[in-house]
Length: 301
Image 1 (cartoon, rainbow, N blue to C red):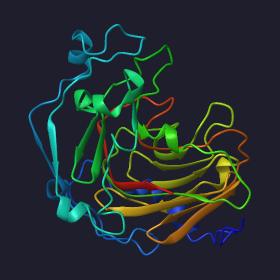
Image 2: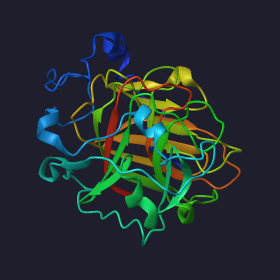
Image 3: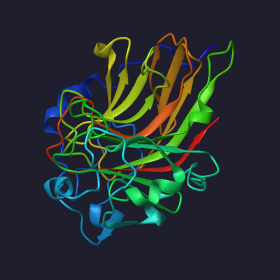
């Protein structure tokens, strides 16, 4: 397979120097789009993009409840949260706007703090971390949260994936993932891992090959597994700026596009089934602030 533009032009080298002065995610209005940014959308205020109805428990209050007990095991009780109402007119635009979620029909699974493989019929019980509005999936993690489904330290996440759409590499067969992403809050996406909001990962042998990550300043990064020195800044501040992401992957070569522009390529040999995951995953990092990411029209082919 040939994936075009194998050599990335280095468009963002200047942008790397600007990362430390990126706007804070605590603000509700942001700086104008910089010339090096790939994202085409303007920055909307958080008040324009979503509202909440109800309240969410603090992590300490949640641990005092029975929602995630017994700790260290897969649980099915779930935990409810405040209702998130998004501005569909602003968020659901572009090529993925009309792609329905269809979680039940697509046999989608949810990996969250208390269980790694929740069936779609259980999603509504876990609204603290996962909700749907129109064609948009709403992923949230909260201050201080950690994994409780086993003994792995930190590793908080809320991601969806489709087991039936994992695939073995085949000659000249390219798989595609596409969706519209909107990062609303990323203050909790700190080093060393930041937040993965997309990853090509299907097993624990080959692990992940490429990720799309966002950091605590809202900067968006292309992350290739084979050489982290080749990670590239896509936009200095993605907060409140919806963008379309597409990944092409044949099991060795992959390429990522943001709003139609190639932002990176790489190679990672896979020997077992590959899948795509999207949502929020913080790896070894702690979570000092809340995180919210929206994914509209996630589609695979």
